[in-house]
Amino acid sequence: MSIISMVLVVVVAFLAGMGGILDEFQFHQPLVACTLIGLVTGNLEAGIILGGTIQMVALGWANIGAAVAPDAALASVASAIILALGGKGVAGVPAAFAVAMPLAVAGLFITMIARTLAVAMVHAMDRAADNGNIRAIEMWQIAAICMQGLRVAIPAALLLMIPAESVQALLNSMPAWLNEGMSIGGGMVVAVGYAMVINMMASKEVWPFFMLGFVIAAISQITLIGLGVIGVALALLYIQITKNAGSAGGNSGSGDPLGDILNDY
Image (cartoon, rainbow, N blue to C red; front, side, top):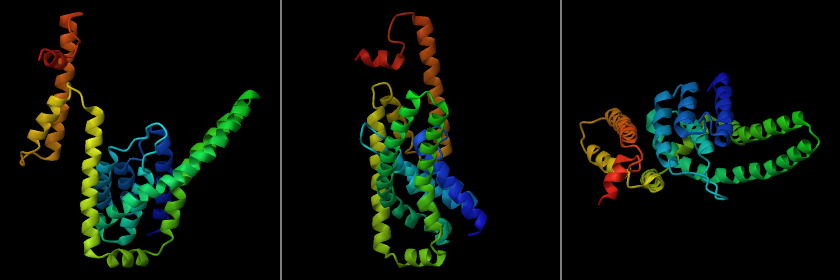
């Protein structure tokens, strides 16, 4: 891997670390982070496949209260780097994905350290606010965000220092039963991620769309792009029906045609 590629990987890792806190540009999402690292390392196709695979797992990850979700940013960046150093391209995706899940859990430890340090920064910002020092507040804010970026960038830089031959030897030494077991386990985690998302979205208004999509997905001739188009069309149709019902019905009903229909039963 060239020096330029290594620098770009660290930059992507830095942006992914900040994205995990900002939630604005979504650099921490596996599909984005793995794709960008695949692009700068010359493994674009493999990066997209790896990112999409991890994304299916990360769909159900969310910070709820004091519970911190697994670190999707670190898992995505580290697994993409291992994929690039392994030199197997698309064939190395299963092995890289198998490493991603333990890395996501290990990233929780680094996340807790960063958040603990952020508490001291918040107190420093409070003192600056008491003194009316707006400049100091801004500097502490920038420092806290940069710390989150370094939370992922430093481990990424350390991984890049490992010789590619060592990574390839490690991946080749993994027995077939371990690779297959991790792939099966990863598939089960994907199912859990989908279940968590469905559980959060479950309502009587969206269940008809879920059931319809489940049936349509069984038609093997329809590609993922086709399913996406159908989903967008149904969403636009639902929005249009809702607007028409709200404008025509006045205050009658809830404004949700599907909800009103289901309430009658």
